[in-house]
Length: 290
Image (cartoon, rainbow, N blue to C red):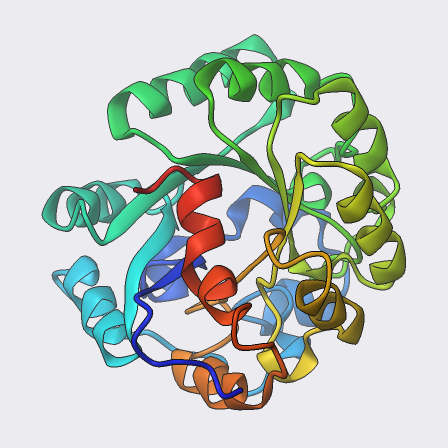
């Protein structure tokens, strides 16, 4: 079935459409990039993976620009980070509290100061999730590293899920900290922690499906992939035993336009009863957006 257009989509990964030269959004791990293209030529560090990367224009109101784009494609709620582009994010959240919901990217290298900053973000913004990019920490920090455990415990205490990038990272940095098998230990040690993978879990998608089946607290989002490239194993899992485990996430404006995402979406072979769960219901439940 072609995806229904009247669902009120929840996009679990959206950025404000701020030009890179204004946002400086990739400074946090720029020191890890060693090849010339990544350091000097790319506007975003995984640019080699995408074609027609969106180039946002300067604006006085990035929240309004984002809402306009969301309305074009039937997106009801966008989950947006609040650690970067702080001033613009604070304004967007204040202006559109029902449409833009915040997540916060943790910094495990800061130790307990980082835990306190996560808690402060929850108090100040009402974040609906934390976010962790293991390969983007400097130095890198594996998914199951002891430095991350206080953050996982704090997410349990705050009753919020955490998005975790898993699988080969797009930026040209080592992949070892994001090996999919590392999720297994964390799911076991923190059964009350809800984990949502980001960015595909490739090349170990078969293992990801096994872990999704094994652990009730593990979920999967389709961020940073055009629908044309959704792994067949994930589509099959959603159509069979995993309909409650797979949720939509885009990658606007980091690497994909909404036009690209939703033109591709027409050809994804989800069953009729999977579409509402994939596009809205699972995210509403797991992120407690109701």
